[in-house]
Image 1 (cartoon, helix red, strand yellow):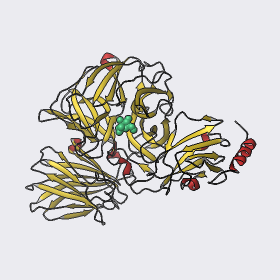
Image 2: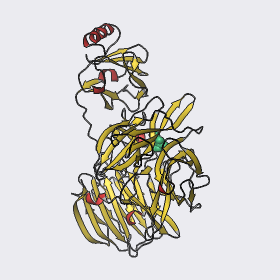
Image 3: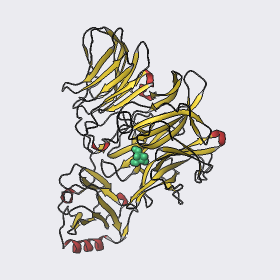
Image 4: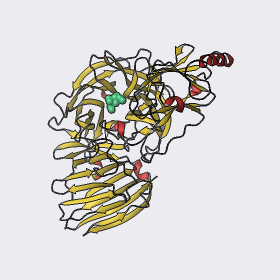
Length: 598
Ligand code: FRU
């Protein structure tokens, strides 16, 4: 490392020429075209980089002693006309007296050159849509949940993450932990891009029997290394192991472990198949799944393909999972292949379909080849996968609560996207077919705070109930049972004093449930957002409903998860009124419980 004095001397020479901006510690030298050098010489903790979401991406390298500090060139939308927000760059890992940030593709008249600054603190903006009991990134962009595993009382959740802006790009795996699936702690970035590529979606396993040779109980991650080149996309599978329970990962020296000539080749999901004592990897490849096996997690053998002529093919298949689940009310178990698809969802864009069948360790057979089954009938449920190594026979899933149609445009600022609440999976039988049941995870019951109970409401005319105070912070659960009596249709809404409204209709004749968010609040950021989503519901005397509302999302669970619908909403203020409309026939709403959550 060069010493401070020499560095200062060099810098003063450099800054005597050309245009420079920023403050003394952060000196900018524009080269007259769109190339720039930023000299950083500060003891402060952070460099705060100004970002404008709509600006084109610039390319950034950090250079020390003439060499790049990372094999990966970051892409940052440094602000040109206005600064939307800042992203922090933690300087504590750099030699502060001599690091140069080389920025390409950002014009010299951009506003970022005067807005860039050093700071000891990074203060988050207040975001009125940030949910309170759903997992979100502290700042930056998030998509798919990745690599979830449970170990020693802790649930680990990684996720597709851009630390340099609130739109998709620079994919890293960031990491959060929780002991109750409701409160999450930010653990920071766990896997960063490298010379092979950025870090796309994947999974983790706990190698209990030391099959890989890294030690008993080592956490092993599998992800897609992805790189776009002028000659086409490179997607290959890579591996990394953690000797500190998932906090940091060491990349396997012989990566990638799997390559293919297919363009879309990604999202490895690995699990142990006990009867054959081998590992299985599911991969999404174009519009089918490929199944591989391995004894040591490093050498993989292709076993079979699944998908041709099965289910929906309106888009690319992504983020697979394969889990064995109990069938409610029987001693049977069946395998469920989870298949996320984008586009091609029932209401446009992304969604999660699944197949129920048999698996022998190498081949999956769909028992219902004629049917397309959807896991969730909302617009905002995607990339759903399950936790590895969860005790007590539980199979817990979580999904990304957004849709590729508009995920980059939703009206939040310094962060984008939340995950769904975690859901316990099982199977149930209906009309000679097996379906997936996604119940709110049982931890959601312990998360309940103050409750208001209304035993029974006889709806003979329009009835309005205030949800306050439980709804005051915008984070609550409402439970209710609708007994329609002679009504053919029961309509009720969540609304606020500004007239934002989400309409829900239970059609008794067609046995459907509809959620209409066309007037739910802010909808104008995308033509694909305002929508009505509809799902089939079974026939029963009473429709049992649990609605989870959390600032900017509504998750509706009917009959304890037999029918599920997840939709984002952006109301100007929290919905604090529920109104039951009357069509002339009396109906009853029983056991209304309104719980504050958090
Ligand atoms: C799904 C997906 C994955 C990919 C990741 C990239 O949303 O497209 O297939 O690995 O996002 O961020």
